[in-house]
Image 1 (tube, rainbow, N blue to C red):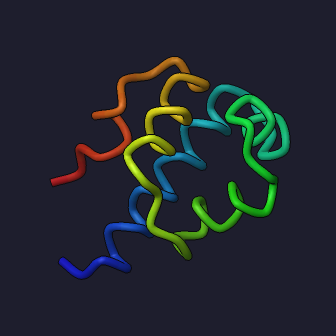
Image 2 (image 1 turned 90 degrees about the horizontal axis):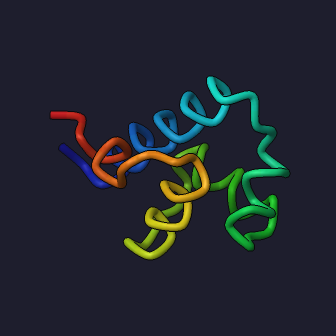
Image 3 (image 1 turned 90 degrees about the vertical axis):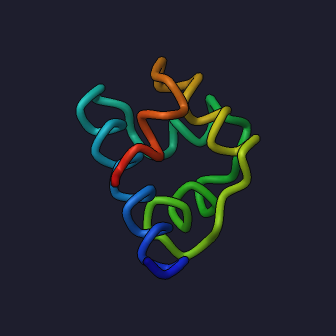
Length: 72
């Protein structure tokens, strides 16, 4: 699997989990202390988030980090 495909899968997973919890992209970005544009790029699969970034997102969504990356 290519890096871009993985980024897209993770981004889609973040978006789906965020929406299922009724959280806007702006609010999630604020909860993680990110700019909204950064969160947008992550969800769009346009950037390769670090483990620390994924950790912050998982904590804000109250899920395990593995829920974001367990896709195989």
